[in-house]
Length: 64
Ligand SMILES: [Zn+2]
Image (cartoon, rainbow, N blue to C red; front, side, top):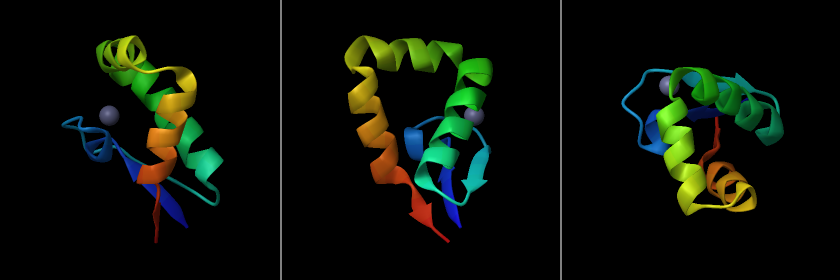
């Protein structure tokens, strides 16, 4: 199983996305972050392109 947490992204939040594939957990974290931390998403999208964010998140996905 793969996981990625808000903490991995530098957000002080206990949310952890779990799934079978990296794409799945990234999409779950994206959904959560868009709703729960819109200011963080806005800040990141100022500094990074969507592609760069995807790469960063992919590198933070952990295997359980
Ligand atoms: Zn969160």
